[in-house]
Image 1 (cartoon, rainbow, N blue to C red):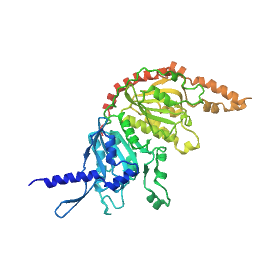
Image 2 (tube, rainbow, N blue to C red):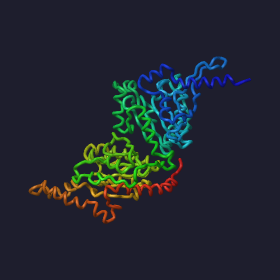
Image 3 (tube, one colour):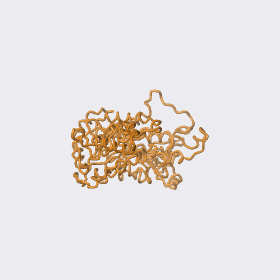
Image 4 (tube, rainbow, N blue to C red):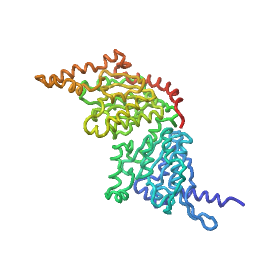
Length: 514
């Protein structure tokens, strides 16, 4: 007896799986300007590298003789693939079936994706569009689904991925409930500008619970979540989102126990940009463009900024120097003078944790006036979140370099210097317990008030005190490693990063396996 019947059924199931939710539902997805999950996977992966797991998983209907009548594939697609020649695990909800709300087999596949990536220690990419659980249950029959009390928590493997492998996610449509939680459980998340929303619960649930009528866009559009830190970046469209994920992954190793990949570069390691010599104004009240410094010092076209619209006073980005991946954070004096806010502290702390996980040496460009002050800063618990950041920096095990561009004041400045940091200062650098203006206002308040010309005396005192804050005597006392011409920053950091990467293998070897 042959196996023709069974072999035919295997082919039938694969054909059903490729049809997804059927022609009409696929057309409806395209009419919204959205790709299907299979199209998304094909777009981000190298050609013909998708090795699907479980295409035959789903719900089957059979006649009394066991012949297949109908097959509804799992509405979660996953498998192995390659991005720029490197292995990964990839998957996402199929919105053309049940709006992405998990079916029984779809739920199992979605849970398995983290385990699969952990087993192979390769990056994980999740492309989300779908709702969370349904009141009818994953099986759709309204029966209560139960799991044994001894089962490991479902989110245990999600947590483990963040300690072990790069996780990049995208919201490519409406994402709610469980998929929304999975979206933010990542090292890098992105959402499209116009077609995506991220929600804890949808409008109908909100209206029933809170009596408020709202839209998905009002609650969870990109204009909200790129500014509150829920997602890191915004994309013009799906193609842009997938390209940004590919770029993010290019800086990182496959897992926490490997070194970041070196890339070839034609940018000279000793390049000196003359504009740096005069970029920082002598008047400390005037602003300048910190990003120009970052782009000048790093390899050309190698800088990838993250969370630009969240906590704008702090800049975080991945970049390369002499082909070596690094993590950078800096102050942007255009926003609150670059002062460290509560949300800025959270942004930088999370970034340092990512750099620690994936062995990226850290460089900071310092223009820190201190923690943000005032009633709103106090309400935001700035000192709590800021101190958390300072302690994270103080305990960081990575090679660290700090370039003092202008201000370095107060407790907040400590966050810019990891243990044994390589510290360089520009002539524009000034350091102290508090900024000159605030310090003079407090320490000399009576003298200023008693003077015939208070404003004149204030300026005189500020000029006098500012000399004490200068980087010159600090360099002479070896309080910094060197006082340098700003144009020499790239050459000096190029040599430093070579030393840093020689030290990394010993640091990585001491990491515990999960």
